Amino acid sequence: MESNEREPAEAAVPPVVPPVDPPVAAAAVPSARPPADPPVEPLAELPADPPGAPSADPPGALAQPPRAPGIAGLSAPYRIVTALALAAVGLAACGHLALVFLHVAPSNTVSKQHAQTVDDWIYPEFEQNWKLFAPNPLQQNIAVEVRAEVRTPGGAPVAGGWRDLSAQDGAAIRHSLLPSHTRQNELRRAWDFFTGSHDEDNKPIGERGELSERYLRRIALSRLADDGIARDEVVRIQLRSATRAVAAPPWSEEKTDTQTYYRELPWWTV
Image (cartoon, rainbow, N blue to C red):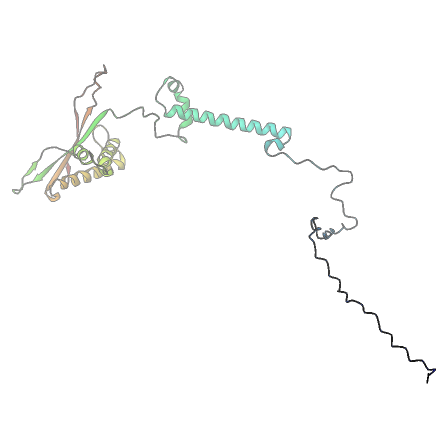
């Protein structure tokens, strides 16, 4: 039996859609352009001058050029004054050096001709105690000798022979790698001190003369003690100098008196 009723239609089946992957973000590719500079903050504006205050730069004023350093930066009158002052200082310095040179240089025609001018300038403020080129080297050999009067066991004083103290000093420093400064200068300076503070009659001049006598006496007694003479045995001592000029070299025609001259001092009681 046919039925007039139709079968219900099949349920609509949705179409199959293939799954679509989500879009992948593109990899960041470094740009060839340099990165942009960060934004610069605007500078803070200076506070405006109060109303009525005078302006630092008058309207329409031009910028002043920088001043040149040194004398060139001065005006013309000041440059002239500075140049004259420098010239005067330079001339004074040159004149001073010239006069000092004539004072310390060996005696010559110029120094003799202007001796009064040189002395007036040098003394007393610029006095020099040295000489240039050693114009007056030592031309004499001066030896200091001493002898002592000692008391014998019987009580009678007996004078001994002369002892060359300068020769002893020379022997002590000759061929020595470390010569004694005392041996080189003590006796020589003491004798110079004595002769400079005494007159030709061996009389002391002022207090320095008496001081030089005591100084020379102590040196002589010390040297005698080194030779084995007891100080309590010494009654008196006497000193003398033996001066002999240095002979001229064989090739020189100069005649030199090489005779020895003695200067004997009086006996000094110890």
